[in-house]
Each structure stands twice: as C-alpha cells, then as structure tokens.
Amino acid sequence: MDQRKLLIVCMPGRMGDIVAAEPAFRRLREMYPDRLFVWYTKKNFAEIFRSAPFPDETVTFDSSEEYFRKKAGFPPDAVVYEFNLRPPRTAAPNARTTARPAESRKLLHNFIAGTGIVLADETPRFYIDEAAEIPELPEKYAVFHCSSNGKHRQWQTAKWNAAAEQVIRLGFKVVELGIVPVLTLKDPDVISLTGRSDIHAAAKIIRGAALFVGVESGFAHIANAVGTFGIIITGKLRNYPEYNLYTGNFAEGGKCNPAGFYNEFPDRLPADVVNHLITEALENRPQSYDACRRYCLTRQVEFLQSRWYVRAADLIVRPLRNLRLALTAHSRKG
Image 1 (cartoon, rainbow, N blue to C red):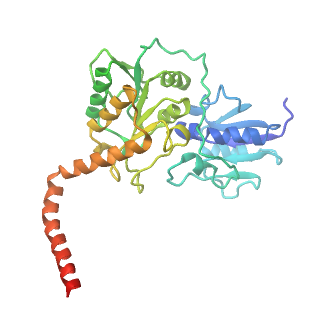
Image 2: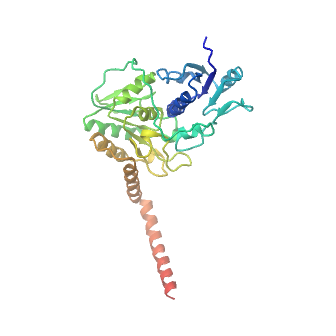
Image 3: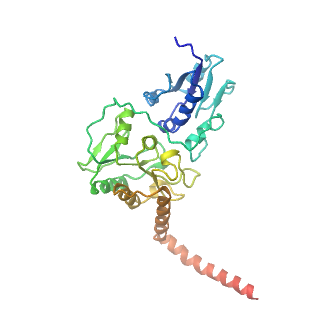
C-alpha cells in the first residue's frame, strides 16, 4: 500500500472544463511531487487523464453529496484542492476551494482564483492514449462539432450544411463528431462519427484534422489542447457581448478564429462569414485572431445596414442629428 501523503484534487466536470484546467493539474503535480495525486471526478470523465503523468489514482462519484461524504474520511494531513465545486457549509481548513466559476472569459483563470496556484496564459495539454482505435480516415479532412450543452451557443443546421459544402468544394472531407448528428447533408464526403464515446479516439481524430469548426464545447477545448487550428462559432454569452474562454493556442493572437457578431447570439451569424474563414484557413492563409475580429465586425455593420429597420431608423435619426449639429454651430457663432 502506498504510504505517501495525499494530494486530493476534485473536479467533477464538464469535459471542456477539465481539459481547460489541465495546466492547474500539471502545476499541482509540480508543487507536490512527493504526494500521492488522487483525482476525484464524475464517472463520465474518469478517462480524460488516463494517459497523463498525473493522477496516480482516480476515484469517481455520482454527485457532489457523495464526494462530500467521501471527503469526511480524508486524512487530516491531506492537501485538498476543489475546482468548480460548491463547498459544504463547513469546508475542511486544508481545502483550497473554488466555487462554480463566474462568467469569465478564461475558464482556467476562474478555476484557480483563490487557490494560490499561479499560472500564465498557458495552453492545456491533452495526453492522447495512442492505443485508442480510430477508423481509417481520408488524408485531408476538417472536423465539425455542431452542438453544445449551452442553448445560446447553437448554430442552425442549414448553416452547418452550407459550411460543410464549402469544405467539400475546397477538396476536403468533413468528419462530424458529437453525441448526435447535426449535419443533414447527403454527401459521401461527409463522414459521421457521432455517438462514439472514446474521448481519446476523438482527440486523435481532431489532432489529424486540417481544421476544427465548432461551437464552444469540450471538443473545442480538445482542439485547443492538441494544436489544431479552430474556427469557433461564438458571439454573446449571457451578459457578455463577446467572450473567449480559452488560454494558450485559442487565446487572442493564437490558432483560433472566433466567428461571431458582437453582442449577438451565434444563431445571428450568417453562413457566408464562416465560409470565408474556412476558405482562408484551408487555402493556407488563415486569418489572425485580431484580423478575424475586425472582419466579423465589418460584416456585422454591413449586415445591419442591409436591414430595413436600420435604414428606416437612419432616415429619422440622420436629419435630427444634422439639425442638432447645425443648432450647436449657430449657437457658437452667436
């Protein structure tokens, strides 16, 4: 039996949260090299770090209440870190705890707030189990992940189909990942691998892709971790007019194009905006993060100006604005 003192790290999920928080796990291993690293998580996510140099052991639970019952039996000399978990009313004095994160632009920074862990804007790592089996895939393909748990992060099926058609026109296949299929395009160049549960197989598929196109999701965080260029359908999130939850590769200036309109939910984004970014990426001239944001803002202005209600409002507002300017100029002369 291992006699080392315990380093207990609890993070119940979701998949994207756990992948985004990997630099914190890695840092804890560095901070406590001589302790037995025990990771507590929900059963659905126990396989994420199965090939990582941490943890030493994984313990699963079904609910936070079950974890707190287990916690009551932790030895008093255990060092405990809890991420994205609501603490009990009387948390153990040796627990470094973060509650569910506030709506921030960086998941990692939210998770480590108040824990004493210091990290820069670091890319997470995904430790792929190379033994994971994947089907034979074409040489040139893009991965699509078209659905997320967040109801305000969705994009319409017709637009996804249009984006897939654009990828195919450029000579690439489309591989769709996810729980359920979203693409309805009947084309032999669309390969559905939805419904598969092995996260390491999915990571291998994403790593081999020329491009990842998806909503903000756990698969997008994997794309960030394995270094695949990503076009992320984004926009407004609750009270944030725009957001970027990633660190490292997908952070500002990195290997990501955030495709979204300012202060608009993703479903307002036209398909041709994403198709343009897809073309740029697959023709080896991907836009930088900042160039993508400027392009999306320009397209948003054009989109608004094409709406009848915007033009009608301008017909009313412009004369009033000109009159106000004229009156101001006249008063100054007087």
